[in-house]
Length: 258
Ligand code: NAI
View (cartoon, protein in one colour):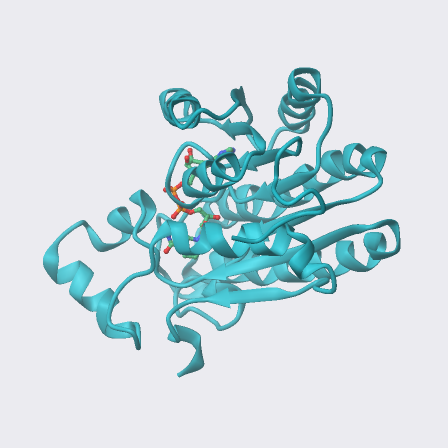
């Protein structure tokens, strides 16, 4: 596993949004396994409590914090609670996101659905970084990883809002990376392919047929595991990635290579 200056993530603090489920939960657990204290932020009450419990079962330290990433006051309060509990902030994984309810060509796309997706998947990442960065600056160094998608790299037919939001996350990541590179905060993004999470279960309908369609789009013939994204996030936060700035790392089994 990747290491930081003291050989692990011990004594470090990570804030993870969307940590009640899927990729966020796997990453929260990975940070904890490597010794970090983790702030488990989500809108899902039972899910975030469950992730915190899973971390404590591993012998790790966690707090579950309510955080709707579209509400600046929630984000700020969640970060304040994190620093109150653990004394500092070193890493943030801005991962909370939703999939579209609607598939429709751009001219037929509902404005309300556009706003909903952009609000959570793009503006939420901005709000989180806006309030995380001043706290990380206090440590003198740290790293942020934002969750984009294959939809941040290629266009997805009949998905204008999600495609725009996830492309936007990459642009935002690059701008913030340039703003803070000289102050020792590295900002990068991950672009997962099809990952086997509850979100993907809703997308495939959980049927063998739905899953088979997704496998067929993946050159490796399977979905990714949330843990495979978690490994990339931990690496991006580690000193091994000290020269990696403003990068959008694609982890997708080759899906967007085709
Ligand atoms: P998931 O649905 O399993 O987990 C998403 C979590 O985000 C849930 O716990 C949910 O409660 C939380 N959330 C939703 N809205 C929120 C809000 N306003 N504030 C705080 N938390 C909120 O989804 P999954 O698959 O783990 O996705 C995580 C991220 O990865 C998302 O940004 C998604 O767009 C992205 N992604 C997922 C892929 C996949 O195949 N599963 C592929 C590419 C990107």
